[in-house]
Image (cartoon, rainbow, N blue to C red; front, side, top):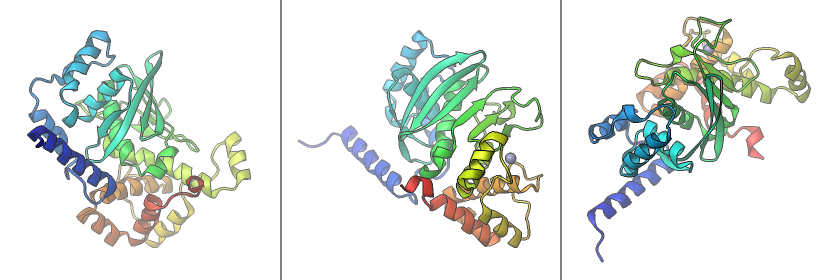
Length: 312
Ligand SMILES: [Zn+2]
């Protein structure tokens, strides 16, 4: 029996999914915003605003019925809404065209904060969101950005908290990572006018988490034990970074804290900029590598090397 047109289309899509999943070089679509635009344009009946924050029962069934017919081309926001409603892992395609299994479990609400556990291909991160934000939208962006972190580095990120007035002591920050932790704290400034989360800020803050994580791996057991009691001792970035950074003439690297020359900030800015270039893979990566050959080498090793603690 010959295959119908929809069946053929589905098989073609599966092939593309598989291809883009296995070969990081093949990324569809190229423009991170392209997929979103395309699916939005093709779907006039979907009212994005109807994906309410809390997803009460009537909303749940509406979302489920809307999404039921759109499984092949959902935005991250719709996919997270579907994951919340179905309480089962769903197929998640990030804005670069790579595919993952995504599960979201809603936990308790404590005061203004609602807890979620987000699991992407078996790796989990805790998320806490203030009530004023569009939860499916923020969760969709988080899943998208989290999926861009290389798999072996994701365990460093343990928690993302977004609430306004998060920084009483650090009022001028939109994001903050306490030393020696894998906890990203975001404030209102991390969210744009349309309710979306800043990709660059997320990756900058993850750069701090990464610095903490790598520095701890380099520390001996005794130092980590002491740091567990008194807090981080010394700068939160791997040793190799300092040498490479100095040999490049201590540049003020582009990134979310481009105004600061503190080594920790430079490490986070460098990671943010490198990751953006690495995911782009083309001219951006070439430019970064030409301008900062030593730093590119340090970040390339971090990006592509399985860390010691995850090899066993
Ligand atoms: Zn920073």
